[in-house]
Every structure is written in structure tokens, then in C-alpha cells.
Image (tube, rainbow, N blue to C red; front, side, top):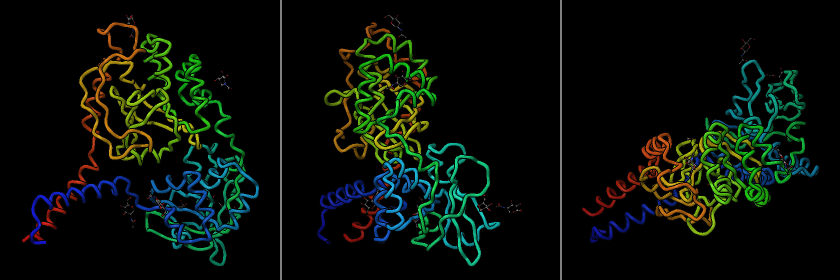
Length: 428
Ligand SMILES: *[C@@H]1O[C@H](CO)[C@@H](O)[C@H](O)[C@H]1NC(C)=O
Ligand SMILES: *[C@@H]1O[C@H](CO)[C@@H](O)[C@H](O)[C@H]1NC(C)=O
Ligand SMILES: *[C@@H]1O[C@H](CO)[C@@H](O)[C@H](O)[C@H]1NC(C)=O
Ligand SMILES: *[C@@H]1O[C@H](CO)[C@@H](O)[C@H](O)[C@H]1NC(C)=O
Ligand SMILES: *[C@@H]1O[C@H](CO)[C@@H](O)[C@H](O)[C@H]1NC(C)=O
Ligand SMILES: *[C@@H]1O[C@H](CO)[C@@H](O)[C@H](O)[C@H]1NC(C)=O
């Protein structure tokens, strides 16, 4: 070790850095799949948490309780042949958005509590259904019940399942319990239509994106692109009404092909739950992508906030309209402007390279700015750039100041210092 030269030291430090970068880009406080994998009696439950993508949602949260059921209880549920979407609803009712260790369960204030659940948090639950009633009973038993009907009359849910045992507790972060049975809930069990049978534009229209939906219906090319992709996986970022309404004059100036491309730019041909978007920074190819580096955008996270960056503007995800594999529709606060259709308002620094691509087949390298006009660019003259409103420019620079490689960067620098210190000591 004492003959280690600074050059090899630097190489080792660089290799360790790369290793650190590869292993720390997705850190989780806990991994429910990993926790349950140790207990074969919950393997079916665990399998379905993965299939429904609930595992990722669980890993994103802290102060949470998972009420697991054993394989026998799961086969009772599966014997009714529910669709995967229905299974997701039912299992999400088994994830309580509060921490209940065995001790707290037996010492509930006033002996009874209503716990909010992930079913309710997904917005799929109508009214105030989706709470789980936990009640301390005689002889040290703890009963669990879910609203069996769709009304919010606090008439008390029948306590149909009972606490069996604590499986694993990571205080304040996650408690995994076993309960005796799957919680019945008429609401969660109601058959959920497969997303491919859902009407995309009516989901959008009903939830604040009517202008985008109506515009989509005017482009036969775009609407069929969207519909054709639902089955294989589709994520849509639909701009809220105020944003799209303000954009309409610019939209109307686009050619027919340009209009279709702009609309298709708001969809990606893969299903991405919010948890997936939060844990993956990188380039996303869109429905408008045709060849390398065309009509793509970058997804970037800032804590809980997911942002989408085009080379012109940056939009934030503000809500979820539907998240049922293979279809997710989110609202965004701005219209996403592709460089291929709109010129950048001001020279914008290239976004920092993302640590890993969001989808396996997406190119990871940052793109060069292409200033040349695409074939389907707006018909108006160069002097009138549709994107140069003061709003867009201001937002862009503000976002650039706050975005970038911040959290990852700090960590890697710390690792570099530690590595340097360790090797420094060994050299003397
Ligand atoms: C609990 O969660 C926090 C924040 O996510 C994390 O920093 C911490 O390591 C977790 N604790 C344990 C024991 O896993
Ligand atoms: C969670 O654990 C499972 C099984 O151990 C593993 O396959 C998976 O990659 C882990 N997920 C994360 C996000 O670390
Ligand atoms: C417990 O019961 C008391 C008296 O009925 C009430 O004032 C209090 O809000 C209850 N606490 C909780 C946590 O429900
Ligand atoms: C929970 O259900 C029990 C039994 O049906 C009922 O007595 C109790 O009031 C309910 N608890 C709450 C907090 O609604
Ligand atoms: C979806 O709903 C819209 C109204 O929002 C309607 O015009 C359209 O025909 C519907 N499409 C299908 C396939 O039902
Ligand atoms: C649309 O194009 C016309 C003519 O090219 C131009 O005068 C007008 O300013 C453009 N409108 C917008 C909103 O870009």
C-alpha cells in the first residue's frame, strides 16, 4: 500500500466514486419486497405488491403500516378471479398511512381509530370510503374492518379481520403486521374497468384538463396514437385548463403535423407510476419521438416534486388523474414545448446529465441543442418565436438555478473526500 502512487489513488477514488454513483442513485429507507421475502407464508401477498406496483409506493413512504395476509387468505381473494386493477385497490386498502407497531395497536387512544389508507390516497376511493377501523377488543384482540359500503355514515365497519402478529417493525418508518383475512370492501372490490376500455379524453375532461382533451379529439392522428398505446403502457402529462387555454393561439398556428406532434409530445409509450417517475431521473422518449434525440424530455426530481424539462420549458406534475397499470395520467402546470416546434427563448444551459435513464431503452446522453427548424415547425417567421413570452423565460432561469445535480452531487463529493482521507492515511 505504501507504494501507491497518486495516479493510481485517483483511479481507485474514481472507481469508488463510480461505484457509489451506481449504488446510491436510488436509496430507500426500506424495501417491502425484501422484508417480506424472508417469510414464505406471505409470498403471494408480496408477489402482488410487486405486480400492482404498490411495493414502490410503499418504499417511497415512511410512517406506514402494511397489513399482510398469508397465502391461504390471498388464495381466497384470488379464487374470485379479480382483475389486477381490483387486486391493487384491495391491497392498497391494506396499507395504512400511519405507523402501528404491535404496542400502539394494543394501546389505541379510546380503544378505536380510523386509519387512512393508500386506497383512499390514490383518489380511486369515492367519498370517505377507504378508511380502516382498528378497534381494541376483549382479551387483547385487535379487530380490523373496512367500510363495506359506499356511505360515509360512521356506523362502524364490521371488524372482520384480526391482528395475528407483528412481522417486522422499523420504528416510525414501517410496520409490517399479519392480519387474519383480506379486508372486504365493496368499494375496493367493485370491478375496475381495464384502462384500455376507459375513455382517455373523458377522464381528462372530468378532472381539469378539458381544453387539452377537446384539442386531442380534433387531431385524429394524435387521438389514435394515444389510444393505440394504452394496452402496451401509456403515461400522459396533460396540461391543466388555464395553461392549455393560454397556449391555444400558438397551437392554432402550428401545421396539422405540428399539432399532432405537440399533442403526442405529452405522452410516453410506457407506464410510469409516480413512484417510478420519482425514482428515475433521465431522458424520456415521447409518442412524438421519431428517431434519436427527437421530441424527448428529461424527468428530474426535486424531493417529492417531479419535474419535466424540455429544452425550452419546465413543467411540474401537479396531480394524478388515474394510475392503473398500464395507464397513468398526470396533470402538469404547463404545456410542454418541444424544441423541434418552438425556438428557445434564450440560450439555455444544457441540463445536467441524469444519473440513469428512466427507461432501459432510452438514450442516456444529454442532447446537443438543435437550433435548426424542424420540418413541421410553425409556419410563422423566425422573428416571432411562440415560446419567447417573459413567463417562460423567467420560469426557465428560476428552475435552472434550483435544478441540476444537487443531491447526488453532494453525496459523491463527500464520498470523494472520505476516499481521499482513507487512502491518504494509508500512504503515510
Ligand atoms: C427511516 O427513514 C428515514 C428517512 O427516510 C431514513 O433516513 C432512516 O434510515 C430510516 N430508518 C431505518 C431504521 O431504516
Ligand atoms: C427490493 O428488494 C428486492 C428483493 O430483495 C430486490 O429485487 C429489489 O431490487 C429491491 N428494490 C430496491 C428498490 O432496492
Ligand atoms: C377520546 O375520547 C375523548 C372523550 O370522549 C375525546 O375528547 C377525545 O377526542 C378522544 N380522542 C381521540 C384520539 O379520539
Ligand atoms: C369502529 O368499529 C366499531 C365496531 O363497528 C365501532 O364501535 C367504532 O365506533 C368504530 N370506530 C370508529 C373510530 O369509527
Ligand atoms: C370519449 O369521450 C368523448 C367525449 O369526452 C367522446 O367524444 C368520444 O367519442 C369517446 N370515445 C370513445 C372511444 O368512447
Ligand atoms: C400566428 O401566426 C401569425 C402569422 O404568421 C402571427 O402574426 C401571429 O403572431 C402568430 N400568433 C402566435 C400566437 O404565435
